[in-house]
Amino acid sequence: MRYMTAGESHGPEEVAIIEGIPAGLHLTAEMINEQLHRRQVGYGRGARQKIEQDEVILMAGVRHQMTLGSPIALNVHNRDHNNWADIMDPNQPATPENSTRRVQRPRPGHADLVGGIKYGHQDDLRNVLERSSARETVMRVAVGAVAKALLAEVGVDVHGFVANIGPVYTDMTQLEGMADLEAVRKQSEQFETRTLDAETDAKMRELIDQTKQDRDTVGGTVEVIATGVPVGLGSYVSADAKLDSQIAQALMSINAFKGVAFGEGFAMQASFGSQVMDEIYWDAERGFYRGSNHLGGFEGGMTTGEPIVVKGLVKPIPTLYRPMQSVDIQSHEVNRASIERSDTTAVPTAAVIAEAMVAIKLAEAMLDKFDSDQVARFKVQVAEYRQAVKEF
Ligand code: EPS
Picture 1 (cartoon, rainbow, N blue to C red):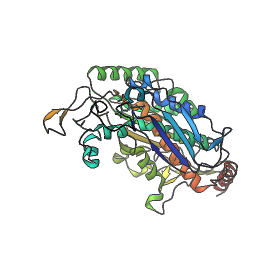
Picture 2: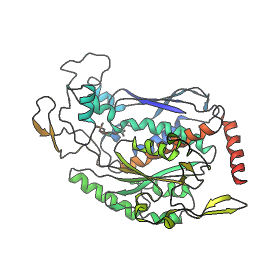
Picture 3: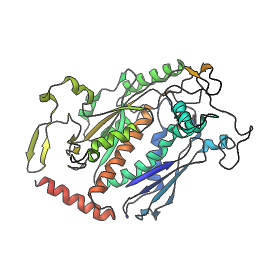
Picture 4: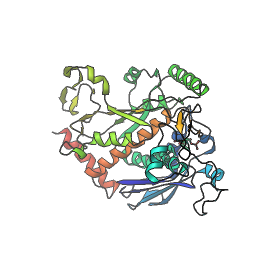
């Protein structure tokens, strides 16, 4: 399975093509739209989300709600394009009238300056920011929804929520009282901050309101958990076969992500070996299993069969309404950075995007290991493999 996306933030459309999804997967626009809707919900987002009501169009690869095994083409219209039709018109040459709203003072922390230097966009850094915008993640979530549908066929569930926003932390011990990932989902999806309880949600919203008032932005950490993952996805034999490294790359590729850690992550730097290894047990019912999951479901780049637990650190958004120092790319005069409409925080949304990226990597790994032509055969092979693992 592989995919590619295209689309500028205020351009006409966002698109994705996915190749390698087996034939016979039940897939509807509603299944994808449900995830697109989740991506749009998030306390701290700006005015753009009031304009967009993301809905996918299934352009190819699906017939009568079933995948055909052919490439799946997905399309989401940018409603805001109506407000940018001239400025983002692909068909007209540039004129003074359609080249307004130029960006010439790069925002520190955004792709503006380096992208402009790299691609030679000295006239207008909009040519960079339109694609480097996190608007692109709408298609990642659409692709992730397809991956999640495939994973659900074999009992793999993936969910993302928020571990902290700025100095306000979710009490993660609450997870211990939750029976399964569905319970975590039910709990966190109640809150626009995607934390796990009402008290923390209130504190996070207060922090975001204050940050907005200060014309600043705030980052945080998201956590993704995947359950039902079979033992032995990925491999220790080559650097690029290690599935945890692939997931780390996938999360780092999301806008504003600056760090990834599995299990107890960076807390392990201050621990002893006896505190972080997950002891091995066996019983006839389950086969091999672990008494704990400090390592977050990976050993040697392979899944252990315990839940995958991965955190992603999201830096504060670089577009500030109280802009920092910059330099005009044409006059080279010192000036404040350009202000573009933006969000105060996108951490609650980032949880949904991170979830999609983990789902994509797990679906890829499953399709590498098991039949990728037909969903029915894929399911049989996964079931046989699970049985063989149990009998080891
Ligand atoms: C973004 C800036 C904002 C966000 C956008 C990401 O866009 P605009 O400038 O149009 O208000 O809303 O995110 C989305 C459009 C989206 O759908 O997630 C940026 O600079 O990255």
